[in-house]
Amino acid sequence: MNIVVPIKQVPDLVEELEIDGSGKDLNREWLKYKVNEFDDHALEEALLYKEANGGTVTAIVLDSDGIDKVLHTAAAKGADKVVKITGDFGDSVSSHTAGKAMADAIQSLGFDIVMTGVQAVDDRDGQLAGIIANHLNTPNINVVTGVTKDGDNLVVQKEYGGGVVAEFEVATPVVVGVQAARETPRYIPVAKIRKASRGINIEEIAGSMDGSAGSDVSRMFKPEGGQGAEMLGDDAEAAAAKIIEILKEKGIK
Image (tube, rainbow, N blue to C red; front, top):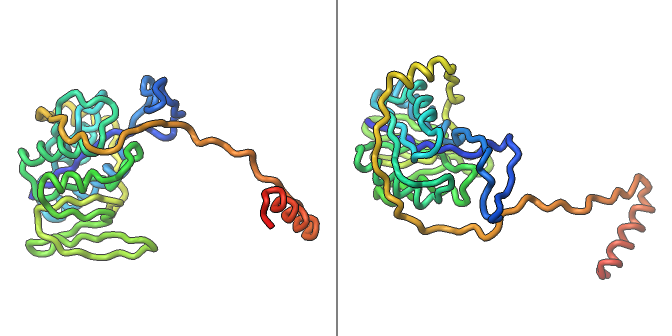
């Protein structure tokens, strides 16, 4: 059983984000990146499944600055194999381009389960799992909170609105979009990551830039603040009179 986990870096939202000169992207010169939270949960769920049932976990990424550290961290956590898809992907890649490149690489690696994060903070559709599944011609289940083994099949827990959770029995191969792992993603000290970086071989696969469909950004801007609220005070009659006055000013009769 080979579980492949696509991982990406996203801007750290703790940092102050600035718009670049084009008005269509972030200024990335000094931008700090971190592993996408949902991908971290996908890796944890894959490791939990491997520890309970055996198999291997392969972490896969698109090439970008500093991405090797992400793979070293995945190896330190327990990934058996780490793969980097090489190519001129740039800092911002659409889900369609990433999904096609990931699917091509995953197909060449061989897989039983693909576990990817259900969404990321820097894309506009949260459809990576579905796009990968489409290219691999496999079933896809999203918003997953647990994957366990039942005979030759998997039992996948899927979360719906209002805290409702359903169980699906599915055969492999399958692609799942992980919302949250059954346990908090494990912490790995820097010393263990450094050790992993010396003992793990990063396999490289040339990637394609196909799959350019999707949406384009026409404008990006920070939320525009309003004028603020007008406090009407504690006097009910005065507040009621003020509300009537405001409504009349707006032409509401």
